[in-house]
Image 1 (spheres, rainbow over the protein chains, first blue to last red):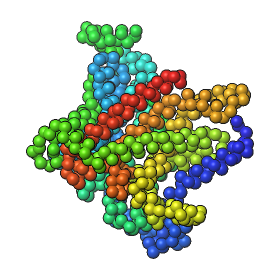
Image 2: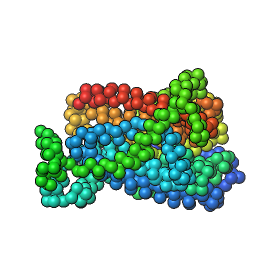
Image 3: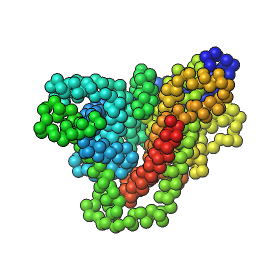
Image 4: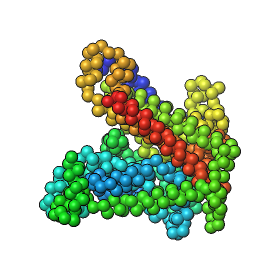
Amino acid sequence: MNRYTARTFALEMLMVAVGIVFAFPVYVLVNLAIRSPSDTSSPIRPTTSPTFANFTGAWREAGLGGALVNSVLVTAVSVLIVLAVSALAAYTLARSTARWSRGTFLLIMLGLILPFQLAALPLYQTVRDLGLLGSVWSLVLFYSGLQVPFTTFLYVGFLRALPRDFEDAAAIDGCSPLATFRYVVLPMLKPVTVTALVLNAVAVWNDFFTPLLYLSGSDQQTVPVAVAGFVGQFVSDWNLIFAALRISIVPVLVVYLALQRSIINGFAGGLKG
Amino acid sequence: MTADLRVRQFGRADAAPRAYRRRGGPPWWFALPALLFFAFVVLVPSVRGVYYAFTDWDGLDPEFDFIGLRNFTDMLDDATASQAIWHTLLIAVAITVIQNGIGLLLALGVNSAIKSRNILRVLLFAPVVVTPIVTAYLWRNLLGPDGAVNSLLAVVGLESWQQDWLGDPDLALWMVVLVVVWQFAGYSMVIFLAGLQSIPREIYEAAAIDGTGAVRRFWSIVRPLLAPAITINLMLSIIGGIKLFDQVYALTGGGPGHATDTISTLIYKDAFTLGEFGYSIALAVVLTIIIAIVSAGQYAALSRNERAAS
C-alpha cells in the first residue's frame, strides 16, 4: 500500500479535481472582488485589468474596521471568560463524588441540546431592560453563558482520563484548592484548552443570529452583522459586496493558514472525546 | 472502591484532617461562576421561554394573557409553520446524509498515499472556519441568474441546465443543502480522518495479505472501528441542520414565498417582524422537542451500534 501505483495516480487526479471544485467559489470571490463595476463579462473569466478600488470603497462604506475591532474584542473576552469558568467548574465536576456534582453536570449538559432560539428571545428582553441592547457587552455576557456547556463537556471528558495523583500530592503538601488548580491542574489541561479555544473562537466569531438580535440598528456591530447590513444596502453592487466579503474573511484565513495544523487537529481531537 | 473511600472521607469532613478533606474533591464553589453564567444566559431564559409559549405576548406590551395551548393549536392550522417544520426535518436529514457521505469519501481520499493529501486537507477544511453568513452571500451570487454556476454550465455546453437556482421553489431548498454541505464536508472529513488514523496499519496489512478486497476491507474493518467518529458526525450534523439559520437567512431569506423557511427563520420573522413573541417562542419549544427526540433516539441507536462494533 506504500507503492505509488496507477490506481494511486488515478485517485490523485480525482482528488485534485474535487479540490478544484471545492475551491471554485473562492476563485470567483477573488476574481470579482478585483473587477471594476463596468466589467460585465462572465464571472468566471479572469479579470483583465484588476482594480483595488472596490476594497477601499467597501472598507469605507461597510464600517468593517470598527466591526473587526468589535469582533476581536467580543471573541477574545468571552472566550477567555468561558475557558476560565468552565475549566474551574469541570475540575470540581470531574473530581467530586458528591451527589450534587453529578446533578449539576447533567443540568449543564442539558444546555447542549437546548436551541439558542429558546433562550435568546426571553434574554432579549432582559438585555433590553439592562440597557445593554446595541452594546457588544451584551454579546460577551451571552457567549460567556452559552458556551459553558460545550466547554465544560470537553474539560470534564479530558479530566476523567487524567490521573488525580498530582492533585492529591499537592493537597497533602498543603497546597490550597485554588493553588492546586492554578499550578497543577491548569498546566495539565493545556492540550484540551487549545482545542476549546479554537472551537469557541470559531463559534463566537461566526455567530450571526445573536448579534443580529442584540445589535441591529446600532452603530456597534460585529463582522457578520456588518456584512449582512452591507449586502442589504448595496443589493446589486456585487463587486463591492465581494470586496467586503473578501476583507471580512482575510483575518480568518490568515489565522487559519498560520495555525492550520493545530486547528485541524483541535477540531478532530476535541470531538473524538 | 476507592471512590467509596473518598465519599466516606468527604462525609466525615469536619472531623478529618485538612489534607484528607481536600481529597474529597475540589470545593463546590469552583462550579459557581460557570453555573451563574449558564443559569443567567441559558437556563432561566429557557424556562421563561417555555412560559411565554403559553401566552399572547407581543414582546413589548407589559400586559399579556395566558392562552393555554392556543399557540400550539394555531400552529397546526398554520400552513407556513407546518411547512417550516417539514423543511427543517428534510434539510437536517439531507445535510446529515450528504455531508457525511462526502466527508467520508474525502477522508478516505486524503488518508491514502496520494502526494497532494496534505494540501488537500488544508484546502477542503478551509471553508469550515469562514463565517457561514459570508459564504452564504458568496453562494447567493454564484447561484444567481448571471452567476458563476450558470456561466460554468455555458462553458461546458449545458446551457439548457441554466436557471435561477434560488428562485425556483422546488430547487431552493436543495441549494441551501448544497451550500451547507460545501462548507462543512471538510468538518466531517477531519473527524473521519482522525478516526481512520487511529486504526493500526497492521490491521489493513493483515487483511491485504489475506487477499481481502477494498470494499470488504472497508465494511468489515474500517466501518466498525470508525463507529465513534460516525456517532459524533451524525449528532453534530443533524442537530446543526435542525437549528440552521444563517445560510437560509442569507441565501433566500426563507423564500421564494415560504419555500425555504425553516423553524429558525420563522421564529425570527414572527418575533421581530410580526411582533408575535408568544407564538414565536412556541415554535422554539417545538424546535426543542424535535431536537430532544432526535438526540435521544440517535443516542440510543448509536450507542447500540458502538457497543456492537466494539
